[in-house]
Image (cartoon, rainbow, N blue to C red; front, side, top):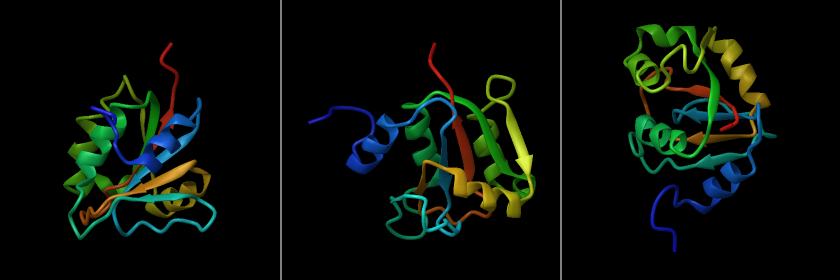
Length: 131
């Protein structure tokens, strides 16, 4: 049995298959996901698990070279959740219209759905390399 890190077997499997430039989405419970994109649904009830908990666990496992969020997040409580964890210039943060972000979800290797209900609590993470 693992004694640290991600415990969810589906999430472990998906993370292990990631390569350079692959995109992973950490999403609130309402983000629409195209049918062809795999979803690892961690949502239990509204608010559980929190976006920040899932993001922190994922960031401990992957190398991130860039991130994309909706421009509308600037007025959301979720904005500092992102900027405090993905601080530019270490991880360039790109802002796009929410509709464009939803379209970009279609390029993701997978989506991790949380129980988060805070508006615009979604981030696309572009994988980097650790060397």
